[in-house]
Image (cartoon, rainbow, N blue to C red):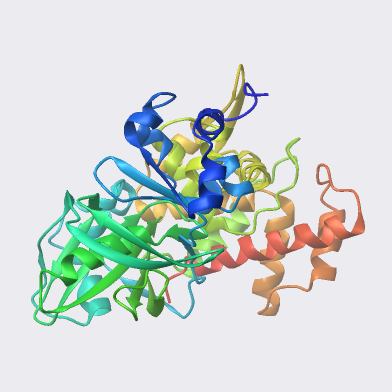
Length: 425
């Protein structure tokens, strides 16, 4: 059984058994475990980094547990309410441009959180979102938390946690005339986040400056910046986090409707591949997965863990990438996904050409091609009934029931809408 489980799962199972962790939590509400104890079975940095709830080891998930650092080398395990769901991005997407005199920032080469933050600053995104002036990058990197106590919700009620010189990390901080804004930046699109990533830095710097401290989450993928500003209504309350502002920005593609029309009517359609027809509505997440695989090949387990998917979502999104010819699947001891030659070629293209190349990979499939043509003819997305009719005429692979047709039709609508979204007004 341990061979099937992930390495973290197996190691935590052994730790829970050796130290009777569940019994201790039942008696005292928490278990304090040291890095040295964890190291008996696996490297602590691999055993304690769970940025998303879905990353938690099986024994944690089954018992509604989470883990938080409390000193430089100690962690508290309890039934903490440690994570928060992201609100879906809402509102209009504001088009922005990289200043013409900046040559070293190119959308296709924004491959790290640090570069994404620099780009957001150069484009005026930070000044607009933070509503502050004369922004200067200040503190970043790893530092000590100092000492503070906080309240956190558990399944048994509110608990007080004491933090003494734990390590914290700040991706970036920008100080302006009125505020100190602390940033957590991510390149992977996920459904939730670990509140600690915002709360610990907030507590540290709220004690060090007199200005209001803003907690900001920045998510970047494929030229799109999603920014979230959170506020802790109770300084000592870990779960008092509240979203106060959310905005979206997109680097202008310079794509016109005529570019899409020229593409649409000049393509040669292909025979449908022997890959399950996609059930993955978010083209943004598909492209994000391709971006991550551009950095390195990943196993199915790594994608599930690092990308905050469950296994079913991993299957849906890797199948969608394979359907589009962007990634290949290799089966050896482990299933490994890596970019195809087409995927590599597309990821190396300039930004505008990359977007059009991805649109091309969608539109060489008859069902998407005809749906977009109908949209352009009628001025609106065709009905589900009409899309299902196109699907039936397109010899799609591995679609059986009537319900399956209807579910897959939503993917067609979503991908066509993505193509329309890359057109600059």
